[in-house]
Length: 77
Image (cartoon, rainbow, N blue to C red):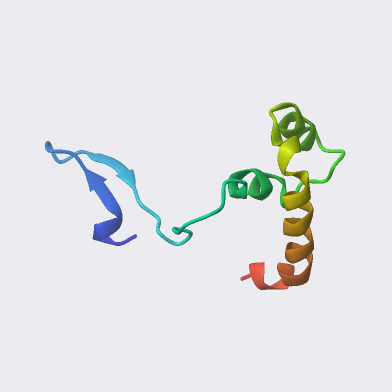
């Protein structure tokens, strides 16, 4: 944590932290496809997201899964 990533109010209380590692412009569907990226289709979270309206981004989600399968090794430290 660096000092410039810490939010402080007028009284000196810490109110939050900023993490710009993933900052940027993302397409409308990004949060939905990211939520589904590593989730098996038979897992409760996948089913929950489908009920929440993610169905409209299923095609984009499949693209995201395909990309992830090609780059998954780069996610490990």
